[in-house]
Length: 605
Ligand code: ADP
Image: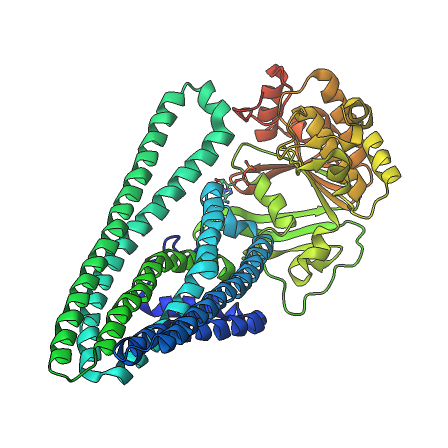
């Protein structure tokens, strides 16, 4: 059952860099018209850049040498016209290419979002949430920079370069060859710098991933850290990661900032070579002075595109690495997939059968073995047992967050692996220990259970969940905004809202992970009654912490080490002794009245 996740920071190799670029470019396909428009304007501006020096050379030879001010004036006007057209063309090329880039980015973000929802828990839970966040935010931003600026500048520069090279070759072959002799040197120097830069940037990406992961952890764990007096320790650890990121960035800046001066030096050398050799040829009478003047212009214009391309190349490295990691996420296959001919589960009565089910998260480490059980429609099944016994795993299998390794799980006689996940989960409700509220209003959070429910239905559900009264007393009533984790609402209130949400959804099968969190006795009583209402008439699997739940359950299953070691009703189990009787005895002395000997979450208020 081992799932192999691809390495997070895969090395980008020259071969797959081409693939990545191709794949990015393929995203442009739907927007080919605007790409084409951009290329059209690129050609115009490249032409303008090649034509400028040609006109200047002509002016020197034909009009200045021949003392023809009228001709000179005409050329000057023409030159101004050419450069103006070039400038406008540049503006349009950038606009159309950035526009296409933004479309691609929006598509990419949408795909990432869909993929996260498509992937099963199994794919995602291994990644630290902070790292995943940083990956998505930073990586997409890097791709953004490349698509909206890098790509258009690269294309523009390459076309400009081609235009210039053609013009130089046509003007004078020997002089063109001398000018271009510098190219191999430039390529070598660029290769050297980009290798250094790639290494430096990879380091900055890794370290920023660490920093975000740490920040995310600090934010969610600050209470725990304070409770355990670990703040200093955590701050020191953060200091180290932060310093590593700072140093990596400084190194990366050192590498990139050395690049421009090196290119300037080469450009100066080349200008000198052109002036010297061109001057010699002019003195020999082999070229005109105008041609030498044009060449001096070309050398300048010729370095700019190369420099742009090489600089972009270094940032393109980051974009490729970023794109690679985004694609890696997009390419992950969900661990739980619908079969090609999966059928929709019809509306069920709620009979649940486990037939000799075994499962492990990793090969050779079974977590559940030989689980066999049968729940009649409407029955409440209480799951008890020590921490790590496999209770949560058992309900995850029923929800089909994972597929069983062997055996079968049947709902109303249908093997859940043959059914679509959507049709299965739409008939199941989950209420967990850690009530999760989405950002939005209380109303929206309850309606999340059934999106087409009217306001009246929402109020009814809230009343049934004993939530209506406190919601009415909130400053904004049902329209009160709640934060990601429920903001100003208490743990108990959030729990009541999630119960209301589940009541509204009205699922046939309910999975309930009873809260151990400390709530005041009044709220506890409200939750208790709300839960009883929720369980009524549904097949329920309860990871039970309350004595009353266990007492009222139709069956109590005692799990230990991944097996069902005892089963029966509360009374039957008590009289037969064993693990259950032990758990119960401990409960007699436990003022918190909990059947699971688990410590309460450390960060619970
Ligand atoms: P319980 O709910 O009874 O406390 P769980 O079902 O959470 O038990 O865990 C059963 C066993 O499976 C434990 O040994 C736990 O460490 C392991 N386990 C739980 N979740 C995962 C996971 N996502 N990956 C690997 N092992 C897991």
